[in-house]
Amino acid sequence: MADASFRFHGVLHDFLPRQHRGVAFTHACARAASLKNAIEALGVPHTEVGRLTVNGARATLQRIVREGDAVEVFAKGEELGSDPIFLADAHLGGLARFLRMLGFDTLHDHAFADRDIRRLAHEERRIVLSRDRELLKCREIARGCYVHALKAEAQLREVAERYGLAARARPFTRCLRCNFELRPVAKAEIEDALPPKVRETQERFVRCEGCGRIYWPGSHYARMRAALGDLLGA
Ligand SMILES: [Zn+2]
Image (cartoon, rainbow, N blue to C red; front, side):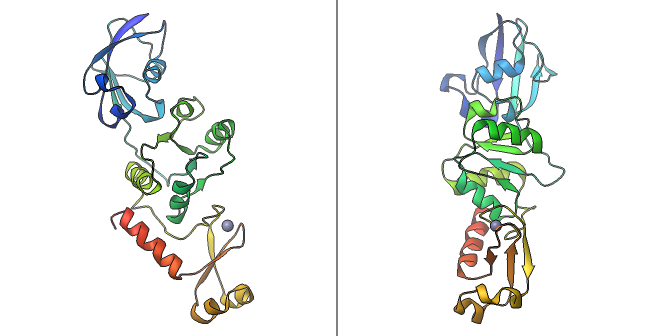
């Protein structure tokens, strides 16, 4: 055992019992525990951890905790080179739909088991979105985001803020149903499949490369645009 002091900062408080928030406290760590082990034992998944210091010096999650260490743990701030790609767990269907509306590649299937998520996260280097702390503690999940909110709109705001999505969004470029990209399609090619009212009033169409679904800027589209504009403060 090694007694070390821990202090967590920022949004990480949400993972801690009240008496551990905003203060340094002592925790008895298991023998040869790494910082990852110790921090996760205290309830914080490694995907949420950003800068770490031990006795004032920068440290990594692999460092072994020693007797008397003073550990400071800061929340993760994300810096992205390319556009983020996501994997929303089985419970986050509403959030997945919103992210697709904004054009972000987001895998989601309500039948995904944890082992599927771990495999896909590892193989495709996706950011796993989840409210399951135990899942986010898995080593295969190098990049993840614990979603604090319960409602899809608030969840989208959280994810949008953490990954700077407002500036990267390309609304209505991805199929809400199957996550494939949408491509413009000539009206003449799809005319027969359209309801009469749409055929009379609409000229611009996009089609899903995956499922063949056709989208056009009708009233449904306008409502989605209004909802997303509000969510992103744009
Ligand atoms: Zn589709």
